[in-house]
Length: 337
Image (cartoon, rainbow, N blue to C red):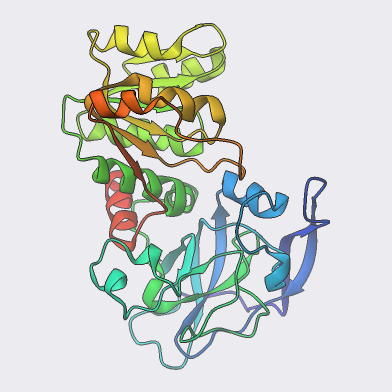
């Protein structure tokens, strides 16, 4: 495949004035040079994740973009390889690849070796946020720029291959939102026929969850606000039921009613806000799972209920982060059907 000449500069969405009053502007930035074991990708699509906003708002208890000299956020992009590092053998120019929330991991620790938890690697590098740590190769950039930039580097060993029958605009968001919710669905151990509730069902992660849960045979209840979200969740995505939190006074009670008075098997909290997390335990049946997915600003939310709710209902509260390589591949497989 003939590739256009690689430019010296490219367009990027760059953040300024990080914090509550941040701004993003389109600027010309240098095209990075891939390291010996890296790829240079020309991205054709990127998703916009709420985590990007957290990074730019600086409202999470974690290192900031500014500390790493990173100005372009974004961590779910899809495109084509336009250059390979001198030691790369398994990729070639013209291959299609995706960039995930984790730019790279060490590949040597216990978490990396188990094939499912490498995103918790102590040396993991967050795309669009952090500078590579010890033992992680890097290109000629100050920090790991995000997918708001047209050309970016990505480690060959941790770039995801995109199937031929999945277009870039579908694949981009799957790199984060699709793989993230797939991780949580698998971790919940819910089965076909179980009730799965999605607070924030009309959002980026939630709408992926509805589709994947249905494909796995679960009975889906979506929670969100407004007629547009109702139509999306019911008519487009195929949820079995929809609860409009702006119209229903006691959302948890409505979930229990819909689930034959028992509560849901799993609540997948994709909405990172206080109300969603506080009500989630009250939606669960005995032995139910409360899956914590959506990030809330630091100090604003807890998984709220009296201890008795957890004790007498044998509830399980499980946190899951972004998807592993395996989860991302699996989510892409669903899209390729």
